[in-house]
Amino acid sequence: MSFPQDFTWGVAAAAYQIEGAAREDGRAPSIWDMHSHAPGRVFEGHTGDVACDHYHRYKEDVALMRNLGTKAYRLSIAWPRVIPQGTGKPNAKGLAFYDKLFDELLAANITPWVTLFHWDLPLALQRRGGFSNRDMVEWFGDYAALMAERYGDRVKNWITFNEPPCTVGLGLLDGVFAPGYKLTHAECLLAAHHLLLAHGRGVQALRAGIKGKIKVTLAHTARERIPATETKADIEAARRDYFASTLRDMWNLSWWADPIMFGKYPEDGLKAFGAEVPEIRTGDMKLISQKIDLLCYNCYTGNRYQAGANGQPEKVPHSWGIGNPRGTLNWLQIAPPALYWAAKFQTERYKLPIVFSENGFCNTDFVHLDGKVHDPQRIDFLARYLGGLKRAASEGIPLAGYFYWSVMDNFEWCEGYKDRFGLIHVDYQTQKRTPKDSYYWYRDVIRTNGAAL
Ligand code: PNW
Image (cartoon, rainbow, N blue to C red; front, side, top):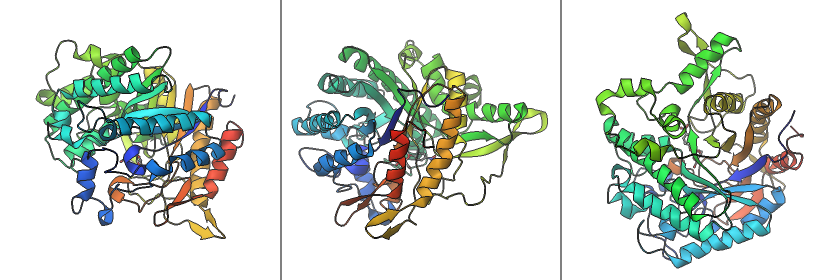
């Protein structure tokens, strides 16, 4: 058995990381404009002001995607571009940009997958408390309703939020990402609850506003747990650690996913966090657990686990073999079986097909030669990771799709433009795009529905 016939091969990006045009056509600032302009927050003071200038070059970018043969493109809408103050009056020029982009994509036979929130919260909403304010539920619901009304005729695949652990953990607890707050753990659990409620309201708004069949989900992320050996004991130890919900850094997958799938927070987390758990009002869990259509997951890295004394999960040092490429981001240590185990563990627990909405590799040690960009490390990375995905497909694990992060080099948040994830190289001085070797390699994978792997 290999990849399903209707398997979605895609590429991904997000608004603030590629669009630029930060002060054009009525776009208002987001928390990431504030954060990137604050001294010391982002590598060498880089900002998303210009980024890849995708706002003006989207036609060229879609043409490159068409040549890649990608079936789908995951993008995000910049909330501060379409509703500058977050609530109230929409911005006609901002709305028109995504009209043009969707039309261009559909004309190229590329299916848009749209994320409503990929971290660029309108600054005006942060001034009103952002995710700490329960009004977020209605702000987001109204935004989702407008997007459904405007684009629902052309967009059928929707992701409400990207990676809640980054928004709440990195943004509100650690203060590394925008808005750079250091709230208490209890305050973060409350913000997390509001985010989940907003997701539920968003799902309702999308379903109410769009005729016909749509797919709605939320893009989770976590660090994978990979069994040290494939004995039953190690597999169960890895699974147990993966779904434990007692970490205090907001990276518990089940804390985010169980409420959506099962309508309740995990027992172990409720017990461990005790009085820090926020008030859960009547109707809250029902709103959060609106039916979603598939699991959606950003998968990058992981660690190996074995069963220790009495089956307790134990982390073991990992080495995935000589010659493994190494990402230039500290947290991005290569773990090739990650896609396989993420797919297996999640589909077994939550019983829906899974789409990988991100997976990718960043490096700086590629080589320009004869007008080409040689990035054998990325090809090596892809071959190893997609091997895990292929194994999942061959075992009949329900897979809906895979999106490479990212279609092109872009603004890598706190790392600025230093770390490059793209299949397409961007020269930020001239905005010249050059497909890397990996672009052509991935093109063959797409064309053959994975048979080239
Ligand atoms: C994702 N981690 O972020 C984001 O969705 C993208 O916007 C980003 O460019 C990409 O991955 C690469 O960083 C993550 O610490 C940030 O495990 C951190 C982690 C995972 C994903």
